[in-house]
Image (cartoon, rainbow, N blue to C red):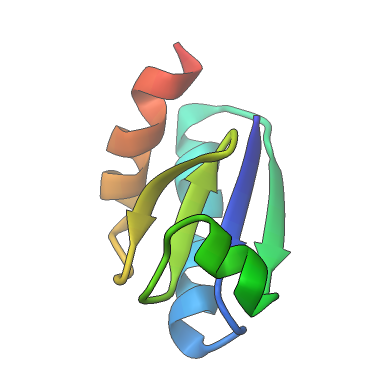
Amino acid sequence: MIIKVLGPGCANCVNLERVTREALEQLGVEATVEKVTDFPTIVGYGVMSTPGLVVDEQLVLSGRVPTAAHVREILEPLVR
């Protein structure tokens, strides 16, 4: 599983990466977590408001920082 955190590196982007890693740990899932800061690439995923979260090339969240529990809910069906 490849997870991409989309954003310029702002505090919200850092927080999204943190809660995503927490959710992965809680699920016991190993994944590659990448940061994407290139605006043309971010817009290419359809994100108009950062941060964004992409799982295996599918945009699953954008424009806010969820809780680790919410990220876990998003990821759980994708890993099972």
